[in-house]
Structure formats: structure tokens, C-alpha cells
Image 1: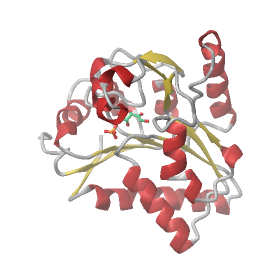
Image 2: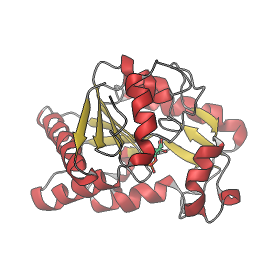
Image 3: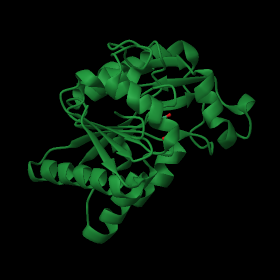
Length: 248
Ligand code: F6R
């Protein structure tokens, strides 16, 4: 996996935002939509901040952007301060000119009997748009991508996932205690990520170093879902020196 190492998250994020902006503009020229797969969490915040800056300062338009978010907690109300809908609006969507009908985030309010149905429609919509042009990812301390926890299969699709204890523990602070963290999430599957034309994974800080090493240098294994990316033809990891510190 090609690994681009930067002094800090800001430098790396600038490079990633530039790549996304170039793609959006290239698609604009062709009169086409640009389909982005987007992540939440702390890692992509600096990328979104750069994109907002480019929208304000360079007139980068998101009118032709269609986006699919990786995941949402389940259950989750969209107006909750913990929802990924809220996160995306605050971190990106409300600050750029993306049309409201162009972004999709798994619905944390679907009745459980209808989740399979919802998931199928989410995948169908993605496929109808021609699949994802550019997929942005973070990586969990356990190697998850999206909320595809260890054990997820390479051909997995959008579905309900039971979150690992470590994933819930990582979110406990934000939720004001472990028992407030939802036990489940709806996540895009590994197959949609693998089908994306370009995949960029972000990792900042020492906490991510062991899983960066395992996914880049270890065997491809369902125990480390990010290791599936070794088989992707157009993937890159953008990391800071700390996250890269265990690479040989
Ligand atoms: C979020 C997501 C997760 C996070 C991962 C890392 O949409 O899919 O896989 O990317 O848990 O989270 P941070 O960036 O907060 O360390």
C-alpha cells in the first residue's frame, strides 16, 4: 500500500483536499457528478476544513458532488449531537454549496425489521450513481474501516454491525460514558469500499501506528479489515510521522 508520510495532519490533509478538489473540477469539466464516499470521526475533520477553505477562497463548487457516508450509529436520531448527520452538516455540508438532495447517510431511525431493505436501497443508489469515485477512510484502533469490524468479509455489503468493545470505548468520552454509546451501527460494506475507483485512508497519531503497520505490512486478514486494501488497485494511506512510526 503506497504510504505518504507527512510531518503533521494539516500538511497531509491539504494534499488530500487538493486531490479531492482536482477530481471535483475534472468531473465538472466533463459535466459529470463526482461521487464521494465520506467518513466521520476526528481524522477527516482537517480535510473538510481545507475543502471549506477552498470553497470560500477559490470558489470550489460542490454542486456536482454526490456523497455517501460510510456509517451511522444505530439507533440514532439525525438531530442528536452524536449523529453523523449532524457531524457532516457541521464539518462540511452546511459550509459548502452541495445540494441537500445529493448527500446520503445511513438512516439511524429505520425500524429494525426494515434495515436489510434500507441497506439494499443504499447499495443500489450507490451503484446507480456508478459507484464511488473517491472513498475517504479513517482506521479504527482495531483495524476497522467504516464500521466493518474485525471478522467482516471482503464481499460484505451495507448492513447492521455490532460494534466492538474497543470501538465503543473509543467513543465513550464523546458520549459521556460507555453506556451511552450505541451498541450497533449501519455501515457500508467492504465491497463498496473495494469497488471505489480511488481510496485514501487517513491516520494521525501514535494510537494508529500498530494498525497502520498491520494493514500495510501484515497478511491480508479479516481480523484487520483495513488489510483488505492491499488488494485495491488505487489506494494510498496518508499518515503523519507518528502513525507511520512502526512501519519498517
Ligand atoms: C467513521 C468511520 C470509522 C472511523 C475510525 C477512526 O465514519 O467509518 O471507521 O474512521 O473509527 O476514527 P477517528 O478518525 O475518530 O480516529
